[in-house]
Image 1 (cartoon, rainbow, N blue to C red):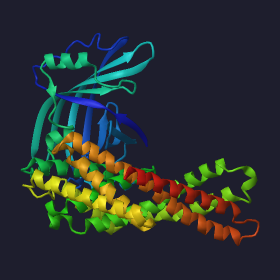
Image 2: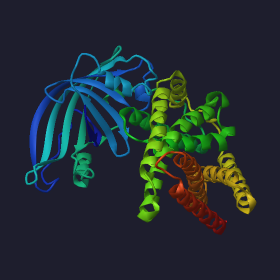
Image 3: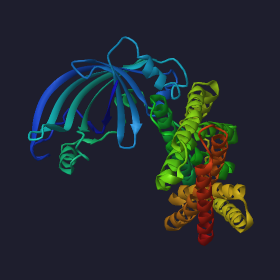
Length: 472
């Protein structure tokens, strides 16, 4: 399996379209022309769960570019994963799609036949691809539908930051228009329509929710690939849970169900892994500044081994959970939201802003109480309240006073950050206390250095308390 980041623009053109002159679009650009005959079979579940999340799976045959291709949404384009051409999908590829496909069987849903005329623009000095322009004549069929059309794709080379303005200008002048379809599959099989909310505030709320769903889906696939998107995935879960908590009254409760509890469950599993990563880095940096003569015994080994002994089973728990029916049920609710939005259709802007204000007042009360005479638990609750107030303000920027909501979000972000740093010291102190106990009862070790690290964390915690009081 290999991967490539695909960045392309698609253009609708008719049969009378004539490709504009490509000379001069890039300096030192040589244009190389060839043709290819390609047949792509697209696969999905019967309910088209992959397409709902912007995921495409196809088997391509033809003159070149053959094999199984999985296209995933990415922040700067689409990530394309490739496997060799076989009769059936590779097991490793199917495993990646367990979450977004909800564990369902995949079958062919559409076939697309493309006669492609390609114009590759290469830098003749550096011998690198600047861009590829494809003039496609397409015939496609799905179920009983048969369509034919023509389109142009402009795919950028790795070193090309954006489509040159000169090329865009020439395409527009020649009669090309930005495509209405994200892919050829969307042309023959348009996404399942969803009920459009009637109010602007409902649309804003769902746009925010949709962005978190995108991040959760990306995190699901990345985790199955063995990469480490745990932090970003947890942030998306936090934002989604905060939305459920703050704006729950303008959501359809029958569509939400017990989603908050289920998200909390999965976030907790991810948190067990993330905490180990954070503490490993934290303690390593602390030991780097302690004089060598004060590091008594195999402290670094103790830190590494203890945290790994916790992290590895935690990772196994995450992997097991992601293949469980409970997790697939969670993903099924999120999938349903793609086409059946859980927002009350006529939710008003006033209601949205009112809920955000309520979250801010709650955060203010908790922060004040925690910083006056509260313990670690109260400070932790205050941090979570500040987080919800911040996320609510960010969500409301599109419907309220943008400048004011930006300032509000920044205000609560400061508290969230400082109190979050304080909470890290609380967790670290507990871990160090337990390490000190084990080291103190193990031959060849002692708890002296762990005591130093513990005292250091207490000093850091006091500093963060003072910093939070200054913010207040």
